[in-house]
Amino acid sequence: MMVFSLFVALILERLRITPEAWKLDPTAERWDNWLNQKDDIQRWRNHDLFGPLLLVAPAILLAVLLSLNNSVLAALLINIIVLTLVIGCRSYRTALRQYFLAAKRGDEEELEAQAETLEYLKDAGLSTGQQLVWLNFRFYAAVSIWFILLGAPGALAYGLLRSRAEVFPHVLAWVEWLPLRICAFGYVLVGHFSKAMPVWLKMVPEGVDNPPQQLVDVAVAAEELPQHVNDDEKHWVEAENLVNLVRRNMILILVIVAFATLLGWVV
Image 1 (cartoon, rainbow, N blue to C red):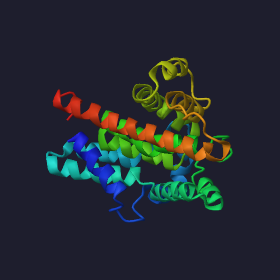
Image 2: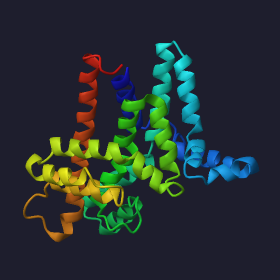
Image 3: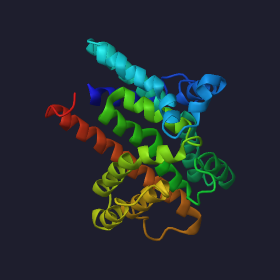
Image 4: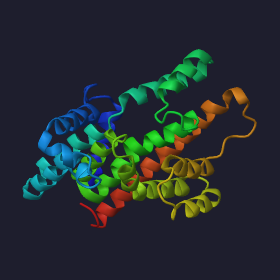
């Protein structure tokens, strides 16, 4: 059921079947604003421990409800609903498509405009392709990994924390510590193993000082640029190669979950 839920959610998101407004961030913002308006909750809101727990309270409630649920169909529908809600990043997908179309026709002005739209981490010093690696991790890989580990409540809790990343950046960094290393190891397996493996081994024991750069370093080592690429093409060729890398990694995640399901390790 887990691999089927992931597969259906990814297909729905890719085919743009869900409504444009079907995304978690606005709902999470309203929930966060409601918490801030309650005077009796406010003093707990800024607490290092209780603040994040209050934010992910809907995920905790969902876990309780699922533990009381005996219907497989209901659980499947909840999984798909939560995954499509948390995964959704249609604006970035649209910008990515326009970015590659502009690159193919040599439209430098449009290329720069879409590259700016794809700049998820402002002033991080990452190229467009490297920004796409982090975007894929935040909206696909990390969501999938937490869903595999903790089910729909895990995916929802991660999505709520991700939506308020500027409020609890350190907490989110630690929440992403394990998924980031799992995702990066996937890059090692689907990319240039001998070059990426030493980078991954060096990254594993590191803390959370700069998670995007840690992940990008492994991705860049795993996916080499073609030789004889001129400077004008370098950025979009790198982006295309890194997008192919993260796509292969998502396929690997689905395959591993499918085998784990067949072996009875997950349900």
